[in-house]
Image (cartoon, rainbow, N blue to C red; front, side, top):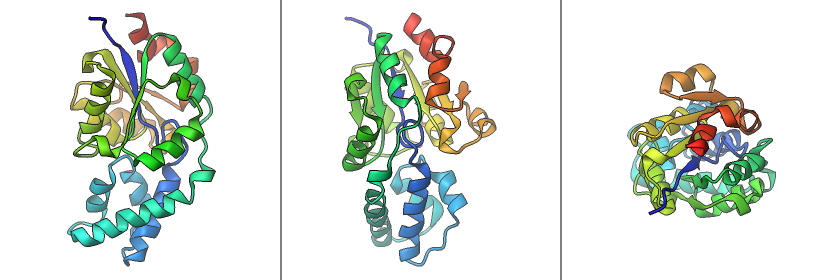
Length: 224
């Protein structure tokens, strides 16, 4: 059986400049139910799945309110779809990864409609092998379910993968499967925090990683 090697990519904050839009959307959703959560606290929780984020920021919230906040976030964030922009080099990085013989798998816990909007912003579907959304995982990040679903979708083993993400939650999720993480600071988390969380390498964004591709974990994986 042919060995499949590949790269799992987080999308929000990693390939698309959407983390602060998510922050505003969550802030508005919480405010609608009179929860005054500072935006800085919300931003630090971005990267968790919505179910984890709400409980993390509003401990003891009842399930009915949780569902209402989640639905409100989705409604607000959808108004930002036309504003979504991929980071510089995002599409080129995916195509370079594919061109080196590696599978390109979007390991996103976004909803299916949000993921469609994100993929439109990236505009590199020709390089994408598989993609996951929130419906593919029983539990969201920092649980490893979405990454396992991405591996399964590509027919790939954890030891044959590298994960590219932007949050400490991404790194924690990948670590549970033994997948090394290349972290990007473009999502708004500092290099020090990402390294402290266990990132093996840190770059400024997709363009920076692309320019150092051959020397990175991605290049090493392609050369195996």
